[in-house]
Length: 394
Image 1: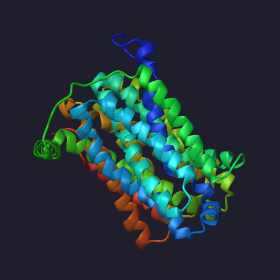
Image 2: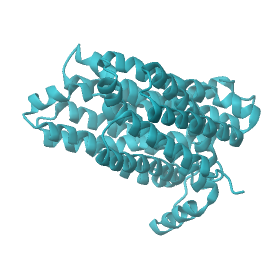
Image 3: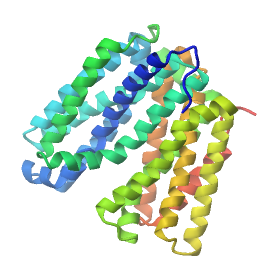
């Protein structure tokens, strides 16, 4: 990754990157770090598998709702108090999860944890766009995006390690400790990055409608939503493909999944340098081309033959390389013209991405079996949709 321009000191950029990375890591690690402990949780709480799995469903529901609220709140009251308040709520709710005597209490605690995680997921984008523009914003969004992609992929492995030292409650104690450390760090180092603006519910609704009508927001927002379809399909379907179709062990699956993620990390990390040389829009177009070309090639291979494992891993790594260029640049393009309502814009962007991915996965996995053909077919369709969408009006 290239260094920030001379308008931003390396120290201040590194500090902001560290803070925003910590916020993003907390929000997504809480999603599935405890998944390896679900069986023991069922026994300990005397509940059913379905009720234990509901702790994940309710988290996603709360996260989606929270993202629609925290952005406007931060526009009105400032980024700093909202994200610090969200981190404090994350600490309290994580402790409540660790102490939950019943699954009902755990469900309630997970809902509050999701509300807190919404602030930690949305506001790093808003703070970035408050503070930086162009290449610098792309670099910082790239760092946050790396954390966003890597956290849910690596969290179950981290949870497995924690389970060697304790039980499922220990995982939530670890999350609590990480949140406390982040809160102390942020309270001393995070500045306010926006001017507070009072707005009524009606005005917020009008601003949201304006954003959704604006091609400069809607285009890149929908492009990044198609990228999230790929992520959602990969996270939910890849375990079945790698383990059941290709016979990998859970450890081997983790290595294969990590190899795929490495393609994303390389592109997201180097996207700032490419955007500095070619421009943000051109970098996005290159990412879309790589995304489409690799996914269509994988679909054709899956239709013609049973692709060998090396081809599947390599192909998915190239797909995710394309996504590593698409997501940071698409995010910057969606938000850069709306600095006066960056919190609301970031909230809408996050909700559009998450809801699109969730709906696509819900429909496709309900209608079709979890196979390689479903995975690459869905990814190719989302890549084609992204290629047809314009980030900027013609």
